[in-house]
Length: 490
Figure 1 (cartoon, rainbow, N blue to C red):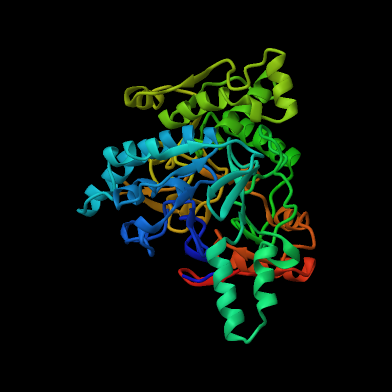
Figure 2 (figure 1 turned 120 degrees about the vertical axis):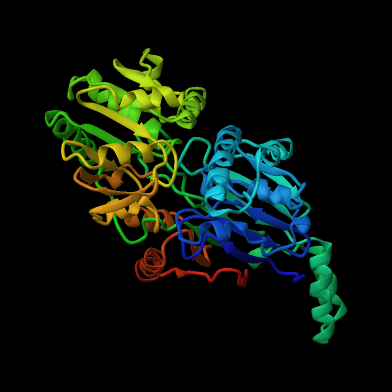
């Protein structure tokens, strides 16, 4: 193994999903995230592939947040032999437990349709959580002899963290430097100096690498703002919206209100495919405000997702991580996730009964990209009627039903049936939990002059390249889009 830190982008490049990055030093191997590849045509095949590293050689796994594309292959990692620690915030651990248990059912359905074995089952998920340890924001935590981490609030979902990794060379690395000095004919004095001053990179500092995970679309209606970069040498950053910008917060709320009113005026049903974690809670918060201020008529609103219901309960216990304004509302007695005519539907029978209710209504159901979950059945039922509306409120990955709708498809295949699309398709990407292009550039600008290079990942190729070019041109910082499974020396 090299005596210098190296990073390999095992997946999560050239695509938004599947974050899995390997950091190697002279002493340690640490993974950042182990996510599911979603949406793409060959996603099942990709997720089934062996990991491109020796699973048993990994010393630790650090998780940025609980979305499936960052945690979805952890049970596969454990199934294949990983038995080391898993680190994250406590909120991420709690949310990951419901995400992974939910994933088991979806994986089994998909595997049965393809005639293959699922990549993991409930027993594998159960083996994950005894390994999982929680740490707090803003605490230095030693992971291995030469790696420590410091978590910053990413503002993306509850408990989401940017992972600032500090690499401090140990005796093994120093001995490697001595071998180089010997080969170069250096003096004994120069060799002794390596022991008198710890090697910590340029200007006698440890090497610092910031893994952003996903960066929140601050200011968020619910959560605190993303923290600044600060003093780091390298950034590994997401680029989901690297080539486009969102509506402003005021504009998206005005548009949301208008879409709801238009749907109700037509007597239609508004379907919102929403990620169970954060997107659903943010929309409930916005609906709560619109209803309480009497800006929209009060109609039945259904949260039709068992996982979203469980996630909302975790959010209700994690209000300390909300922004000051929302905490103030809660302290005054406002239950921000409850309002008249709101119903949480848990059972399949309750879900089926929604379609029998006549008149206008709003349905929030997973998944956010329409690749599974109850929203698929609702779309199959409501898409053929022009009175109805489908509102897309987040990124739709290539190959997903949501992407087909966003791209203007007039016919789609759902459950083997050809569905003619007559319903209105609306998009409001301002409700994304990801920063847009301008704010990603602004985020990088909060780094000090210490910053050497940015690796742009977790985006479609065009978005990643666009963001890297903007950072190069506007900030004068070296940014590149790495290749998958290629080692990069730091």
